[in-house]
Amino acid sequence: MLIPRPRSFVSGAGAFTLNAGTRVYAPDAPEVADLLRELLGPATGLALEAAPAPGPNVISLLCAVRQPPEVEGYRLSVKPTGIVATAAGATGLRWAVQALRQLLPPQVYSPERVLQVAWTVAAAEIRDAPRFGWRGLMLDVGRWYKPIGWLRSMVDLVAMHRMNILHLHLTDDQGWRFEVRRHPRLTEVGAYRLQSPLGHAKDGVGDGRPHGGFYTQTELRELVAYAGRRGVTVVPEIDLPGHTQAAIAAYPELGNRPDLPPEVWTGFGVSRRILNVEDATVAFFRDVLDEVIDVFPGPWIHLGGDEVPADEWAASAGARRRMAQLGLARPEQLLGWWVDRMAAHVRARGRRAVVWDELVGQVPPETVVMAWRGEDRVAEALRAGHDVIATPHTTTYLNYPAADGDGEPLSIASRPSSVFHGPLSFAQIHAYEPMPAPGSSVLGLQGNLWAEYAPTPARAEYDLMPRLAAIAEVGWGVQGDVQGVEAVLDRHLERLDAAGIGYRRPARITIGK
Image (cartoon, rainbow, N blue to C red):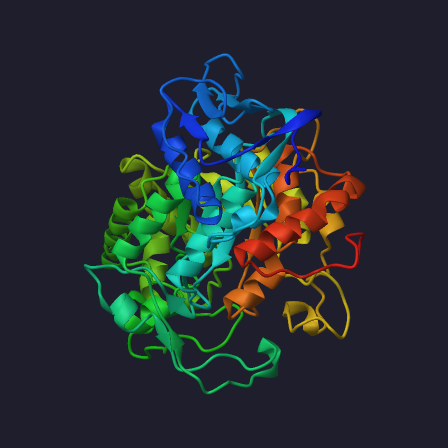
């Protein structure tokens, strides 16, 4: 069975086995035929050459405008004589290909040839379409750099779950990961810190080991193309005007205390160092966004806007002048002014700005809001007229531990706090309803993996899986039936084993386990 599970799955009689003579017919979507070969070829060794017409021993990938009508919907018919996938276009056909891959033996996810396996698919009729158009995963690579090859594996993980967004948090106080050619010190200086916290951030102990790294524009363009072939849009985030200590370390004139330049931050939490409100700083970040937009062709650019302490603005003569010019009563109101400048620039370049929910009421309604501070923030942003992505930390933050216990690794929840930091189990995520009220509408939902306690790919995968599958199930509208998904989870973990993806193996996926 698939994960996420399809809306309709009817088993048939018999099975179809891929073999050396199996061909692919895709007259309207040759790029999807190429994807099928790219995904199935390494493990099976099959060429899956082009067929001139549908027929026996053929996998047909067909576009039919009315069948089904949903942009991302698809139908998949597996019979002993062949396979037919039908969708409105390439988008739905890509999900049909991902579904077909899951119907094959788990070894099909191996990156290397697997011998002595019958590549058999049981006969079935599937009709499927997602409930939500935005089904995302956010990876924080600002705090801990991860290799570009691992990001490609995360694209594959997202696509495996028929999710369509990979949101990259590329900048933070602890590191700047995006190459900006007009401002090279952002990565020459801002991509590297002297050390990182050892143990919990509240312990105040450093590990004494330098850390850093960044992605070139060439690497990111290749990642975007790789994701696009799989139906995944990469959404970049340049967080501002807070979470910018790494940028200020590189260019002290961007900050409010150029006489006291900081280092790239070696702690975790929320730095008090934020951008100033000078015209030159606004122009600097327009330069940055121009290069971001050139690398990432998708519709959305995330501008951050979260957790911006106003202490420095309150003490700044330049900020007070700006407040007087704008008629603002409090320095905190400069946040809306700052982000609105950037959002206007993004709109002028034909893109939509995305921000965190601190900006509700401070930016125009056409700005997309990611509501993270609680489920009530989803409703608040909708009332303000925004398109909303539901990502409340209480139900979608995958950096929160899945369970309590001595055997669990260090996490943000390892020290007492008045704020909820988990545990957050598979079942709790699976039960989440993103719509705050009947008749309301959100763009979708997203799981977020903040990386303070995930310094390595292995630890990140432990936090992600299998809970990302719960996010995917909610996105496709099949959440709530925990027993149903539990029955097919072991098979899904075999797929991850074959792909070389790590995970936390739960004894069972009920709450708190």
